[in-house]
Length: 130
Image 1 (cartoon, rainbow, N blue to C red):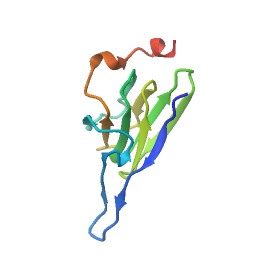
Image 2: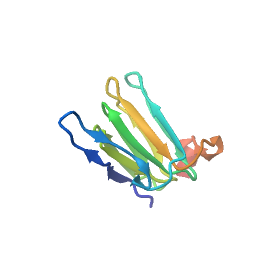
Image 3: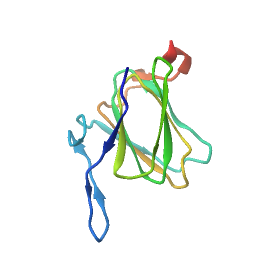
Image 4: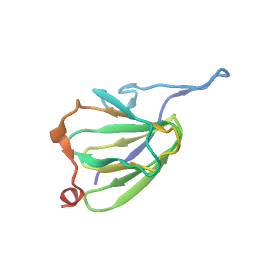
């Protein structure tokens, strides 16, 4: 089975405000090839709703909160709430992911080990489970 891994990102505490950073192979288990973020998600909307065939991803909600529902190809489900900018989750290829329950002004940021490839997506849930 694929393993979802919660990651504690580096956090530098300072009286002026905290700082968290990411670097390839430091806090993130791969070389970063692509970064994207979602924001202004309306109440009740869902993002994601797919799996990748080859791509690995790290997701962090850097402002606000969101739930991430993971479904493994055996049908097992796991849900994680991200609501701290110094926490992230590693999502290996072959795991369905769906982001939901976004708080007002939530921002999720996604780091990938691959450039965008539309053919790497599995977008049909029934096909994924089979």
